[in-house]
Length: 316
Image 1 (cartoon, rainbow, N blue to C red):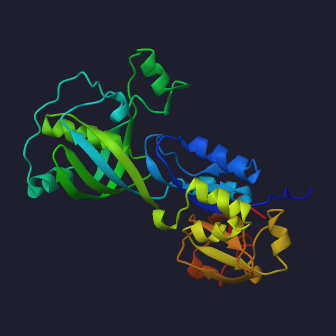
Image 2 (image 1 turned 135 degrees about the horizontal axis):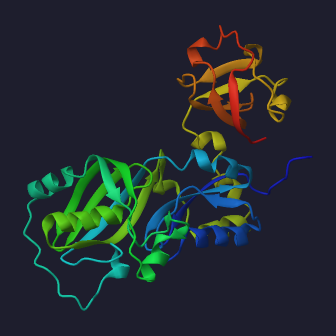
């Protein structure tokens, strides 16, 4: 059976506006380009804005390898009130606010330092995480009591941008799966005055920056002017691990998952050891498959086994 052909294959960086779900963005791009096979690599809350990475066509096969990238955010936290959802949506505006302490930059930096490193974080009850087969926010709206899942996440950087009482602005680089609104809530708990996430903007995913993203309106213009392809990243530009370039004679055998021998290896890129995720590519740079290395990069030339690569996904 021949491979399904798609009009567009690659990765599109979108600047998501506030007020749309990530699924809304996917649906809009599907309608714009007339192509169903499109997915994203990590949800942004509806009230958040910023970088959303979309995979089009054959690039949807690598979504699972992109979801774990570090994320960077800029957050505005309102001090003095709490929220059941940890963001502005769940604020009771009839609630009287608490006194917000006067905080120096030194005191704020000491506070933020508490959250740096590996931390255990409760998943917000108003979230899309499944517990016992049902999304948490649906159970919360029913008034059900739920034991919230605990996640271990890593806050790699958390820095102060500014404080204009009651608004605290911070910048965060964190592991995938981190809830920034939980950090906002916890900051309020530490200060004893309550806090919630007022606004959030994702500025990077891995090595990719919001500066390279396009708006939904711009996508429409690019499509109408037949220039959208120019703004798509190749799969090889977003996979951040090692690679093996295979010979042109071996390339057709990738589709069948054939074992890779050293005489079919032209060269390799990156430093990898046995078990690491790597990808195979052709001499033209086209990514062919993703899988695990069965031999370290430094041992490829002397390897005696008949299969140097364990397949996970075949792309072309």
